[in-house]
Structure formats: structure tokens, C-alpha cells
Image (cartoon, rainbow, N blue to C red; front, side, top):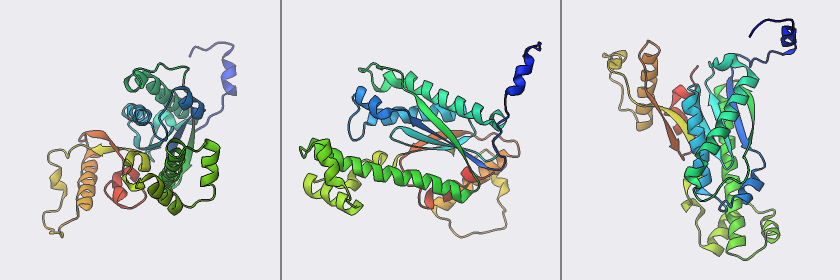
Length: 285
């Protein structure tokens, strides 16, 4: 940037670095997507095309920014976990937030024709975003557990609500009144008794959301020499084997070897231990 007598205005810009030693989570939400989904005829209660479009945009974002190691999406929102040690844009809050939000939005628009070939965008969609800092691994796990629990609560309500409207002949006002004050077990029973639907048979994509994780593709040649040859450990479980292999792979990578990774889209539980035990590198510094 060239110096001139006007350059003093740069002094009005305030630094906004994000605190070191903390995990960064960037959560993006569709702006006024209730109206957007109505205008574009999204299927209720879940439009698989729209959810896959969100997944595609999120995967593109993770491919572009390697410090994003995990993402979770439901409905019109996505949360992205950046590794604790990231120095992306020197951890400048505004730079990270605006870039991730704009790139995700661009990808959403770019891939729209692939998922909605017969529906032209009526107006540009937009997403708002926020970045929150979390101090430790427990807080990160609880964050993603919170988002997945929210997915289940919202989807169960919406599934029963739209069954009452589409199959039960109720108006939306009547359906809301029917569900007011009901517990989860009552909603399950209502869905099964009145509409012969077992909620657990509904697609895991709708019940659990989308988990995008950066997985280690393979272990580099020669990395087996890290393992001590004089030990004979007991037969590990499948989860322990995967966790050990990926931990060793990343350990070798820090010595200079390149490790290839791939971004997997899963619809699995992230509240329990199994997912995290299989991928200890996600929360490593």
C-alpha cells in the first residue's frame, strides 16, 4: 500500500487478533432462510437437495482452508472447527470471519444448479457468521454435542408437525397447538400410532446432521518404525486401532513427511466417546 499524506487514516483501524491458545469455531447461519425455503419450494420437513448443497459448500470451504478439521451442519447452519494452533490470517477476527462467510456463500450459489436444476434462484441467499473461542477439549466436545442435540430436538418436532399438516389434515396453527407442551416420548408415540412411522427409521442425515471430518487417507511408508518393537500390547479394538494409526501418522508428519487427508461426510453420533476416541488428532494442538 503506497504511502501518501492520506495514509494516516490507517491509524483508525483497530487490531482484532483472536486470543492465542484457544480453539476457534466459526458458525454460519442462513439469513432469513424460512422465507428463502418458502420462496424456493423446499420439501418439508427436510429437503435432501438443500442439505446436500450445504454439505457441498462446507466441503469446499474445508478444502480451501486446511486448518478447518471438523464441521457440523444441520438445516441452514454449519459450524467449523479450526485447529487450536491456527495462524490463519494471523488470527485476525474480521478477516477470518468475512472470508469464511463469503466463500461459503459463494460456493452455495455456485453449486445451486447442481442440486436444483429446475429451480432458478429467485434472489441471492446470504449467511451471517460469528466466531467463538473455546478454551479446551471438553468445551469443544460439548459444543458439538449441543448442536447435535439441537438437531434431534428440531427434527423430531418438525417431523411430527409436518405429519400432522400433510397427513393429518391440520392447519399449521392447529399442529403447533397439538404439539405444545409435549415431551419427546409423546412425539415418538404420536408419530408411530397416528402415522405408522418409527422415528429411528428416518434417515440419519435428518436425525443426526452432517459431520464433515478431515480423515488421514493413509500412513506414510516407514512410519511403522515409530512403534516399539519390544512391546506386545493386547489386541486393540477397532476404534483404538484407528486412533493409534492416525496418531502415529500425524506424529510422522510432524517429522517432515506429507500426510494425505480426505474430507469425509458422515451422519454419525458425536455426543458419545467413540467418534472422538477414533480421531484424537482433531483436538490435538
